[in-house]
Length: 106
Image 1: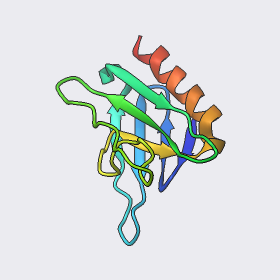
Image 2 (image 1 turned 180 degrees about the horizontal axis):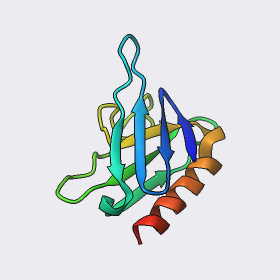
Image 3 (image 1 turned 90 degrees about the vertical axis):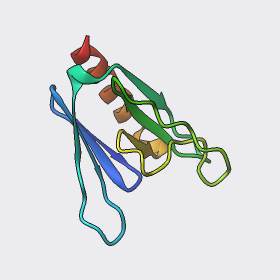
């Protein structure tokens, strides 16, 4: 299962979550997280005006807060390795991915 985000993708194979961000001019550096290690998920659906996000919370680390302002639209910063911004057209796929991760970690 895969979700296309803004400048990246999130893939889930039933056990591992892979977040691949594709910054301009650099090679993608994927982040792999075991679903069993996730302590929580945050999902904010995208709207017509603002992108949403999917964020995975891990033990021993603080969740990156939402950046205020019109440009960032209340999303975690791009540098947060455990989150990815998503466009409105990816809301359904992201919701299914979050549900699958929640089921796998429970």
